[in-house]
Length: 125
Length: 125
Image (tube, rainbow over all chains, first blue to last red; front, side):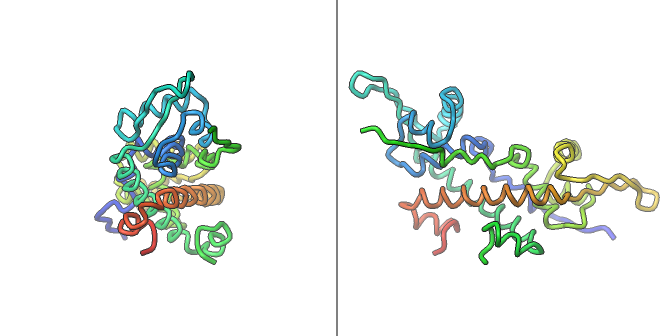
């Protein structure tokens, strides 16, 4: 017996590749939590990234219009500040809707292991 | 005023790169939903992938020990079947715990947009 599948329910097309990268997910979540922006040094620590890695990921996010990077001075010291753009916030929210659907699909799929999932915190006990 | 940050709450180290790739997330969720395994052709349709793409991702998952691929015959026709290994199921569940934490962190971070998130389905209305 051949099963008929007429759509691709597990394609998750909404998982925007610019956002989906692991380190960038951390950067975007940090910036979402700080709508007025974060200093480069604080963002680096929150995400556990090196200077080089954070710079590279910020450049990708900036080129995609998701993040604004402002270079200036605080007293005499150079100060780089990063914040989510309005479009960035919206696109991240759209992405999160798809991500949440994936978590739900997978939790539902693993229904036969419901007790294990409850233990792990995915499903309510 | 300099803020003190002593850890990296947004590093999401548990987001295993083998699993985190968008197409592979679809493959793993499909296989989670079919614990007895899926035919290559059905998996391809569920995930909206081409033959070449699915083969490539299955190879990565197989080499990582997450998926078993069995090549055989059904009548006279070649038949390839794929299923999640026990270790694969466990690692995917571990991954999902981190992913769920990320969704919660981001939803919490966007608390000021609570009404927007409710509309999008991330937070309960």
